[in-house]
Amino acid sequence: MAVAVYSMQLPVKDMFFSPLDITKNKDDPNKYTVHSLWEAFHYNGNEKVEVAMVCQDNVKVDKPKQVKRVSDLKATYVLTVPKGTKPGTVLSCKRSLFGDTYDRFATFNFVHE
Image (cartoon, rainbow, N blue to C red; front, side, top):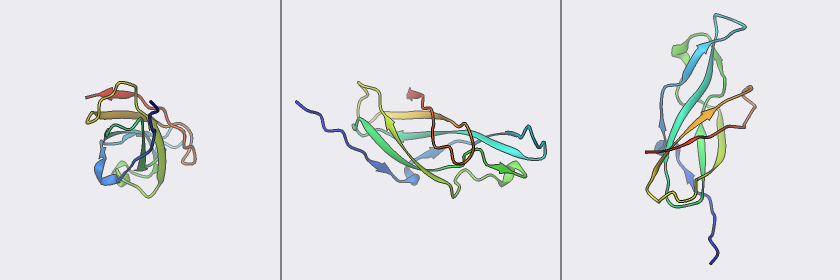
């Protein structure tokens, strides 16, 4: 029996953001760089879940307090859920960002909660 694989888009309001990892920029000590953030979403039984995210990728800012947890930079990622994951499971994924704001590649590590 064939299994249909399809995507579901989750609105941003269904996602949970933690504080961003902010460190001082090596090139300019007066500026800060956003390195990564955590996202969590609800898995509904699809093998792949398309998540429309609003995020900041290595954005340099003058002061940490100017960094918003939700920014105007938007990116869409398709996540592959591990086999055997039951519907209703809450997945957390750590998105490691490398490169500048135009780099749309990310590494996901899934954690069952």
